[in-house]
Image 1 (tube, one colour):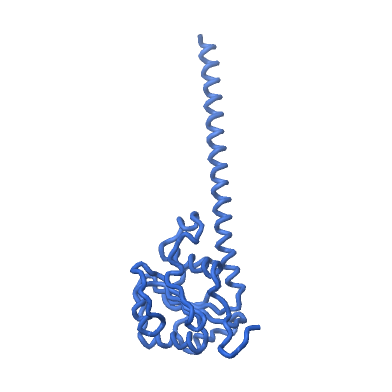
Image 2 (cartoon, one colour):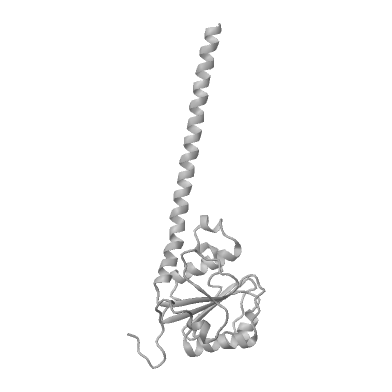
Length: 216
C-alpha cells in the first residue's frame, strides 16, 4: 500500500508540476504578446512624432508643461516678444511657426492683449495657433479668432492658413490614439498625444504662401 500511495503521490506531483509549468508558460507568452502589442502601438505614436519633427516648423508652447511623447520636439516659450519667438541659436531650420497655448488645467493667466498679440501673429505672420483647454475660449472668440458656437466639452482648437482655416475640437477624440497607449495616460496627456497624432493625420501643418505669392 505504501508503494502504491507513493506512486500515486509521485504521479500527482508530476501532473501538478506540469500544470504549473504550463501556467507559467502561458503567462510568459501572454506577457510577451502584450508587450509586443504595446511596443507596436507605441511605435505609432513615435512615428507621428518623427513625422511632425521632420516638418519645417518651429513648434513652441506657452503655459503649463506640455506632457507629450518624449520624441516630440517642442520648445517652451515664456512670452510672445521677438526674443521668445526667435528662440536660441540652435532652433532647427524652419519656414513656419506653431504656438500651442497649453491650458488644460484651466488656470493659465492670459490677458486680452496677449490674445490680440497671438491673433496678429496669425493674421500677419502666418503663425498657426493651437489652444488646448476650455477656460479661455470666450477670450479667443473676443480676440477675433472665430465666432462659432462650440460644445461645452471642447478642449482644443487650431487655426491655420492665416486664420482662414480652423478646427474646433481637433484633438478631443481619444480614439485617434492606440487603446493600450490611452490606458497609460492622464486626461491631459491624452489631449496632447491626440494633438500630435492629428498633426500627422490631418494637413494642419502646411506651409501656405502669402497672398500674392504663388505656390512652388
